[in-house]
Structure formats: C-alpha cells, structure tokens
Image 1 (cartoon, rainbow, N blue to C red):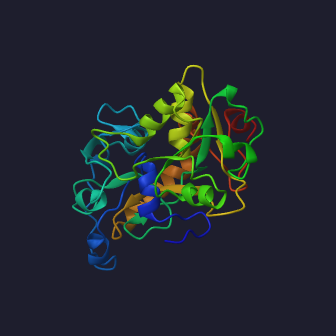
Image 2: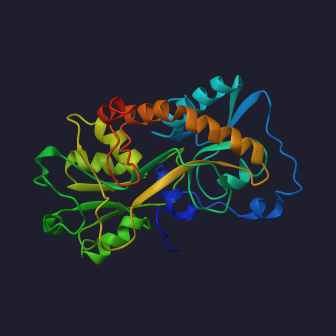
Length: 295
C-alpha cells in the first residue's frame, strides 16, 4: 500500500500503533455494509463506550494507565457521561469485533485516511523516531541516511514504513527485526526492543513516536529520541492521528470534533506528559515551552 502525504494505511500504522503496535489488520465488512444515509446512530447517550486494547501502553490498558484512557476520561467528563470499555487485542479483527459490532462507540487512536471506519479531525501528529543512549555517538543525527548508522545494530518492527527507508540506505544487513503482528496480551515488540537497547543487544531502536517517547522517558537514564521528519528516501514517516467512529455516526463525529477543538491545549499537554514527540504541520516540535507562548 502506498503512503500519500501524511495518511498511512490502517494495516501499516496499526501495526505501528499496536506496538502501539498500532498491528491492526481488521476485516472490512462492517464499514462497507453500513449506509451513512440510512443507518441510525446507535451511540450510547449516557456512557462513553471506548474500544481499546487491554495491554498496549502507552496507549491503553485495563488499568486505565494509557494516554488514550486519560483522554477518554477527559471526554467522558466533558460530555457528562460515565465510561465503559470493550477490550480486544489490536490484532486481526479489532475494528470488526469492537466498533463494527456496536460494542463500543469510539476508537481513541486511528490513522487518518483509512476507510475501515470514519475518522474525526486529527488530534495529534507525530512520527517514527530513532531511540538511542546518550553515549551512542549519534549527536546531531537527523535521518536514516546518516553514515554512522551503517556500523550500528538497529532494531526495527518488520513491515513498518521505516523498514523501507532502512533498506534504501543499506541498513537491513545488521538490523534485528521484531514481529509486527502480535497478541499484545502476551507480548510487546516495543518492550522487547527497548530491553535489547538497554542491554546492548542493539545500538539503536526505530519505533513509532508515542512508543519511542514513552519508553525512552522511562529508561534510566532517559534515552534520546529523534523524530524522523527529514527523510528524503522512502515513505514519509510523520502521520496524523484521529479517533474513529462508525460511518453512520455523523452527529457523534461532530460532537467529538468539537471536543477535540475545544480541548486541544489539554490534549497536547497530556500527550507531552507521556513523552509523545508532537509535531505541527511544519514538523516543528510542539513542547510545553512552545504551548506556554501561544495566546
């Protein structure tokens, strides 16, 4: 599947984010079966019903510790609703078994531009990133084309977009692949990669931005995160993330879009607190300092 502008295919980014890994490759049946012109919206008026992965930090877990959990709590409170979850691992069938089965009404993180569900307006933009120790000798690195990487052992989730960029730059020979499609209830490619980075099995990790930032921040000492926004070969590696609703749920989509617009400063601060490397449309980092300077 080709990547156009900042809109990844769900199959690719899902694997990312379901590390996040975003490993979502759900079936397409429900989105094609519903007719937005005739279907009735079946959104619960009293409960903010969330479709989520039970073990997929920093996004969500059953304990409510992920930033998507916190965002859901924020939105539920603003809407005057209670909150309830339908948990299902982000693997094959996630959308079909949750949102498509009317067991819940919103997926809190969804790549913009996919047709499996209807996306809201995006609420953040981020990119794949390099993660490495401060002592790695990679000061000032900006792209996968940096010659210093040719001597490094690099961890990469197989089948994700930066693998193409690595191949173009001749980096796959020394790369260590990690699985894309996993059951997050029992495994985590991101955690395995970061463990290998900590113990020296690999020198550099290439991870989806939210995961890179979260795990780098938790490391002792913290690791360095470099968003890959300056790539000149291979697919672009920055993407916009929205929420997802059913194709028929137009009023619900509008309500969420309104909340996103009204809550954007709070959303940004929440994501930054989790280490997510936020980017504006010019690839400039959004930081707490830059937010404090905005009117």
